Length: 359
Image 1 (spheres, rainbow, N blue to C red):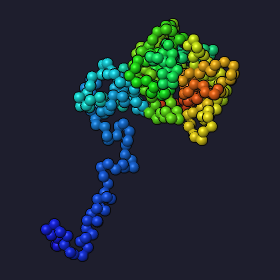
Image 2: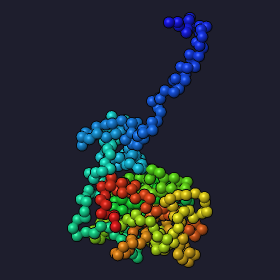
Image 3: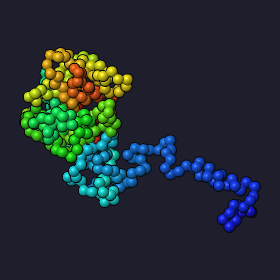
Image 4: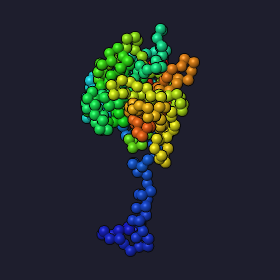
């Protein structure tokens, strides 16, 4: 067999000069380790995360950054938790490295250490499912931060900057924008209809929708987790959540007036943005106050959108979240219906049974 190379020089032989070219083409056509196969798993459980063993409960999990886990080390699939201080009761796992936790996929389980104590699949005897709103909003939440809404140049002495709605005794549904605007600063909540309306409830965990787009407000939903359960004069309760499409009329958008009292503004709804833009955002709605111009528009970012429950019991249920306050007589809202699976998954991971919020 003749060699193609002699003393480092290419020997003159027929076809020898094409050997490097052929070899190069072969190498280029070979699949590499970094190539993406058609069926490659790119989820949190994919190949790029290494497995780990959690000694406290003898479970195998995966190493992820701590912002991808709840406090009980359950994977927050479908979102990242924005809390930058070290969580109590969560010792580091050396095998996972700095700032990483050994977390498990508990999407089909009832979590053992959630904000609400894990419950059975049916409500305890003598209690109701959730609370419908009528002339007021008993589960509306006021959110505060130092200085108020400093990003929108709407500073308040009290610090009020956004609204929200209780979807469990410790979980507040709000907009992702209200979550993203805060970082390491303190955030607290007040519930005007609770037993202690002036009590400040500390926020300990923050979660926003993983698909949130701050430019067009797509997927603008988030959750804030309170340190303590909100106390009411009777038994704890939270909002009834509707995953039906909101009707064009009959809904109300919540907000706060100059005295920081909860105000429910009757609105008419239409799909799409309030401005005439050529874009399609499936979860976006525009709200027009029914009495436009009669009074200042008290619709606040993050506050709930309440719509008719649509059954014989009547009342209003949580059907969306305000994304932007009134501008030119219209407010931008987000509807929950396209995000039913997302919210149900997050609440299930937090140990909140469906009977606590379902109609």
